[in-house]
Length: 329
Image 1 (cartoon, one colour):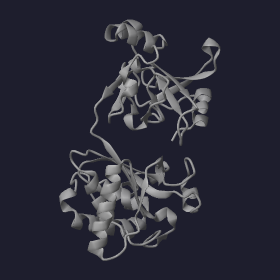
Image 2: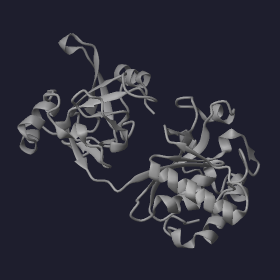
Image 3: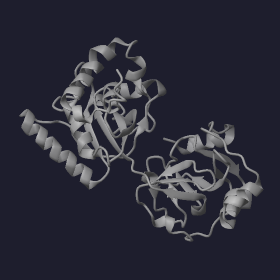
Image 4: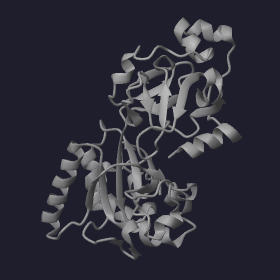
């Protein structure tokens, strides 16, 4: 999660490398943009406040650069700032936006540009909501809203190396990221979380297509592939960072989680200790913890001793949900 200090570092020391670059002449941009789009994005203009209905749209979807099509923001990070311009708390990817000092008009600000094509987007300020406290104030004319079938779910059920490997093999799952959630420390490190003093659990963020696999199906796999009856423990992994937890994003997800926990309690004839909590923030883990099993199955004995039995349990319990192309091991 980017914070104000990160924005200032980018503006002072240089921006992250973009995934790609798009370079056109002004004449080429003028030929594909409307006059207002060209004025704002290529001539660093500003649209009139409250001039777009985009400020009031919060339906699921993504917002891409009107010039080059790069995805810049997700609707999940959009909020009503009351300023008259669409506002977001985080970019879609850390390297989607470029930052530059802007001392024009007698003010000291940080300008935001599309990191792919240098289109002027707006500015970013340190007065947004928790936990990032960022407000990306963006010209609506610089954005194009596109539909997206993606949804996200966040779970904790022991070591994230294990849970990541299971969910990567489910049909309809688009991406899985390991990380931390549920605590008070912003952008914690693995070492800090392992200390048990951050309040965070090791979790995974699952991006999925709800037309292929539903939230309830995801929860069933979660409850069915770890032990939801052991408090702060999964096998030899002990501590609050290994607790069983489901983070919900709306009331429907909360009720679905509670109903399924009750169902599992009846089937197991045991109390399920899985927490059901409001989702606040997800902090990605360090790079070496991402895609761990797929990259380390032949090197770390933990994979054979702990992860592979969990995968075998998943394959046996949920054969209809296996993505055979992803389940290559």
